[in-house]
Image 1 (spheres, rainbow, N blue to C red):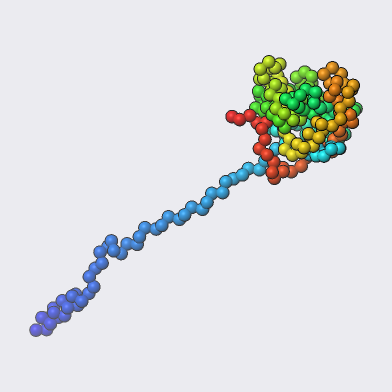
Image 2 (tube, rainbow, N blue to C red):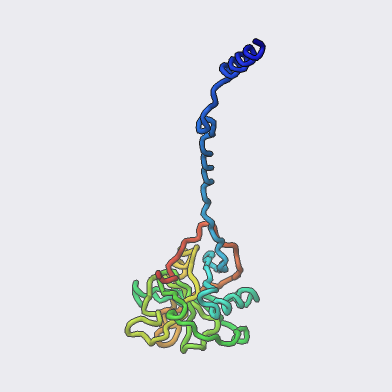
Length: 234
């Protein structure tokens, strides 16, 4: 009798126990993958040097292509950093060449002992640069004799590129471009001209009075510096 009662009690206990929950009902839903944070584009700082040429008529800021034209750029910056460029003059405007060939030229118009030795020529076919409007390029008579003189273009003059059809095959050496003060360059271009000064093709292109570069100093990269045009599209 006692055994029967124990068996009945055990059966009753089993009967009132909750049914086992199927394993799949106890599994948690898969974790939601985290939303990736937005990727902020990395903007590399422009490490190219910038130089402000403060003249009688205002300031022109140029960007120097020291990676693409290292020899010509180093020469220009040497004059800037030693302050030998202070007192150089813009002395030439090619208004007589017409609207398609506009440039102004500057250099040491005083004591030649201030000149550093001539530099090797860097053609545009080697640097990947071009003579577009705003280009800063080295003046020369023959390749390898450039010292202080440089010019700023106020129009495209692609005939100055080394690979220009009908050119001399070497051209001139672009090494930077104007990023601010284009209006000042235009004012220099339109300044008074002597009708008699100069020799050969220079007659009718000599500024009178000439425009002095009071100071030439490195400056930080302007926040709004344009991309520019001297680097040829790949």
